[in-house]
Length: 342
Image (cartoon, rainbow, N blue to C red; front, side):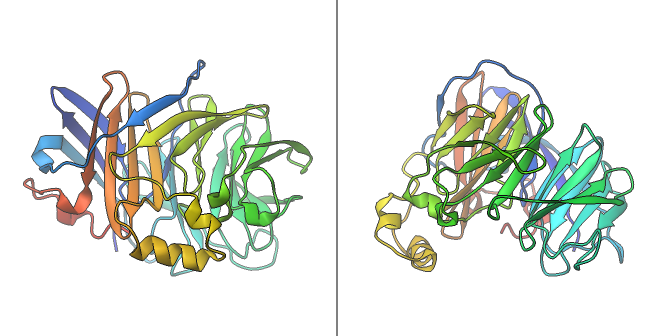
């Protein structure tokens, strides 16, 4: 298997939209902002498009494949300091692969076990830019394993003092760890913020009944500008959070496609029953979404049953598109470059 990273230049009506789209993955970006206001983003009704309607140029970065760099799928991806970091947890041993920005394989973390520098699982990762560290969440041992970013050598393990989180993000500006929880972990808030040693600082975001179900990408946090954003599972809201407050930054609308009603989660006792209904019930019910935010644009990949949809919004122009990926007419011959979207 080989992977491609693609940079699209997308045309929406009369202007050029440049957006980095990592089709099979999740990306964290890191620029700056100050004044926050809640914004309703309406991607509009789903419409049919040709690739030539949307794309003027496309550039590929092919990731090198050799006996050391094969991976099964992308659970999480970050681009930092001209390096591409990819978390892959299946089918082989959970690993973090490092590639140069032009796709050359550099190194990897693949240390499954119980010893020093080893982990039982690799569920989510982050980067501590202040101290030059890669932080790897091991949910099975409820620890964060830390490695030096320059040579991937082991530093230490941090024992998480709260129950096992679904995901986390490190805030270097505050030297604090933000953990995401579902209601089933007996928490009355989604976000628990602690110091490095595990001392609790605050708890934020009241969950709805859907908050007890975890379903989505490995890490539902991202950095944007100087802020931390989080998108709760089964929610159409993106929050900005800091150690003191959390507020809705964006509320996302997708025409007739909507998040499931909370009654679905109230009336079903098991996550299996809920997911069965999600995959076989009413059309137009969104089961998962993943946002990618840049300075001028936002792209949201979302799923209805097994179908993939993509919404793009240009912030300053307030123009948007909403499309079903399988209905996109590929008149530029680029579709086969990506393989199957999962």
